[in-house]
Image (cartoon, rainbow, N blue to C red):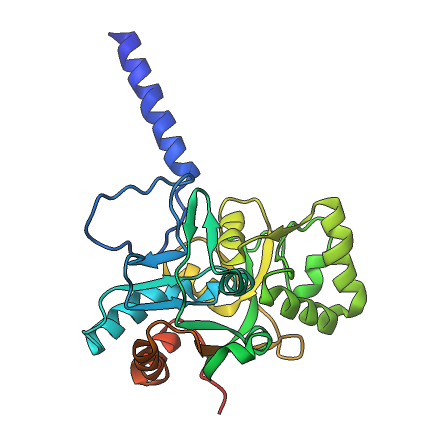
Length: 304
């Protein structure tokens, strides 16, 4: 009996420890209702694909850092426009989404996704690269940078210059496909000149103390939450959201003279399969409903 009790305790502790390993795993949004629920933390969770892929009435490719607005935005849009109930959205890095548009499909694991988007949203530089693909382009929100650190800031990070320290493990968006990566590099130059950018993006990458993410809006929070990184420069809204859902992270603000401002733009594709739905969504996005949601999650208003 003693052996059985000891074994049960050991199994329960092992289960608890395993759960702890994934306690901060996405999806952080509310999953849709209906169907068989089968989300396996660390194995099958697909947090950046949303809604109805079969016969959608509207398809939107959002810049990945806007994943936190999806629940409210889609729910309220459906209420305002009840004729649209089957909506599919992606919140992958904007560079990956752009490649998906150009190539016609995305392969994720064993799944090939060949849906055509009606709307693509991204920063201005990425939108400009695809300018000829859009019939309409509108600015709808903005953002600034902040630094996400472990709770209580044990490494005493005071600003961007501290990310160049040898003892600081940095989680950094890869500029190859993350627009924010290039903007952060601009901020590094503002804060410490080309030497700081070189230290963080070349020297520390080579030594392994700067980790380049593939999908920063998921990886940077998780690396900090699981104590694999000390700090990560991110959009302000990403730290704001992690604190909103009570995840243990702290925020270091970046002074205006070292910060950058981003503007987010939405473009209706000329090839949009659902042009009327796209037009209706753009009206909602730019109206009080959509703008109120973006404000709630810490985004700044669009440029006038």
